[in-house]
Length: 353
Image (cartoon, helix red, strand yellow):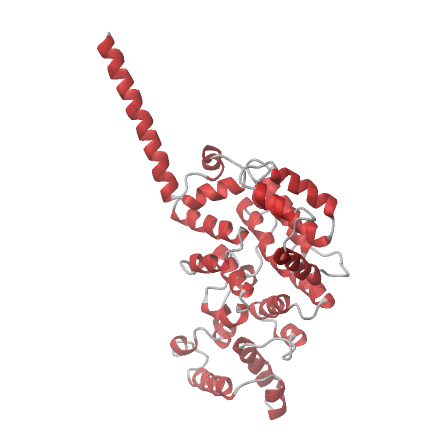
């Protein structure tokens, strides 16, 4: 009898040890899944129930979301470099480059699913994960109505209908807009959540250090003074509202110009483009297509749009090969595959896009 109990005890101890080891292996193998679950305020068991067992793809995507929420943009860039075929990868690749002032210069170096690589769609067919990530770009741009909307939707669709990821965003949106009563409500909730006490404490009005005061001041400088009723998917209108208030919001300007270019709307691009406010070889390449089509390849125009001799020479070579091959791109890919000219003439939307 005693021997049987002893064996049963050993079996139970082994089982518990195995479960513990399994949990440790899981945490080591999928650290971002754990951290993303924590940001959403759910246990690992609840997380697996909501999102399924993680794999390398979901771990990678959650890593992007986790690091972006912490504004670790170098880490976001590092993670995004591992993938060149998904919208979420492109979205965070573009955002991390924009935060470094490199959106236009590096746009064509990566897979671009047209405008969906700039703004994740928020609608009936969007996944809860997409919705939870969609507001990151709007907060960075300074458009708080959409940043706050996406945080609220993200929290609504999260498994526990809460989470520090969304509460932090809601708190900061209201700090930026000056609604201190609403911000304090979110900060009080965060102050009572494990792992968020110090973050919340540092953001209560009256507790800001100079660096955080500067951050809030910079964000407030981006706020639009006039707003218009617009659809959830009208990114161009939102960007133009931002620029109408602050034309020096270079990030908003680059997002607008890149949106024009990814949708191949050169007329909109030329209307939005001011070469005195931003510059990139991407914009030079786009202007050359427009000028060539309109018969505007004059020295005055080339100078006005700051088109370099190097870019002009490359364009002439591209056109020469394009015409020689009757519009085929087979001899252009290697040399010009990362140019806007190649994208403009050969990129085609698939059914999903």
